[in-house]
Amino acid sequence: MTRYVLVNDTTKEVLQEVEGDKEFRTGSPPGLPLKPFSWLPLEDEGVPSYDPETKVSVGPNIVVTDKKVTKSWTIRDKTEEELGVRKDQVVDDLFNFPALAAFIKAIDDGAIQPGAGVGVDSLRAKIKAAM
Image 1: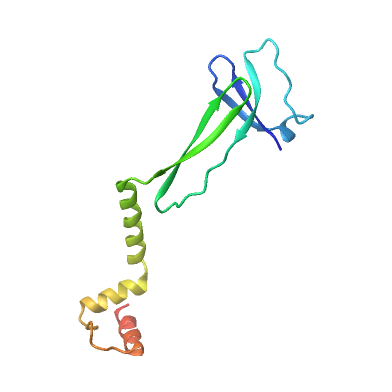
Image 2 (image 1 turned 120 degrees about the vertical axis):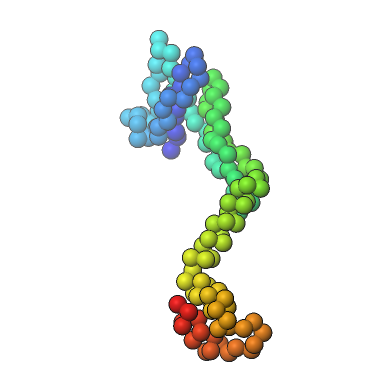
């Protein structure tokens, strides 16, 4: 399935992107004589694989030539600020977990003493009581 892009020949602006098989009866776009527009094939390179925990995709980057349009993405490292936002989200998610909140409350209230050798059943009961 070939994709095509309608391009303004003067400004190289992309005006429309379509699937050739769905948009055109023959699967290929018609010529546009005497018009300042052209249908060009689209070469979509797709987003490269990356680790979203530490990287960000940037794009699409569109390059228009006389013969085709290329769409690509680049990958960059997350900034310190972006990494900090992710860490804030993880911490917020942890504190929205009711069992963890109850556990912390039980420690704060003194119901659980670190290093006191509390058994699992006793710990469960104390967390339930703190909920």
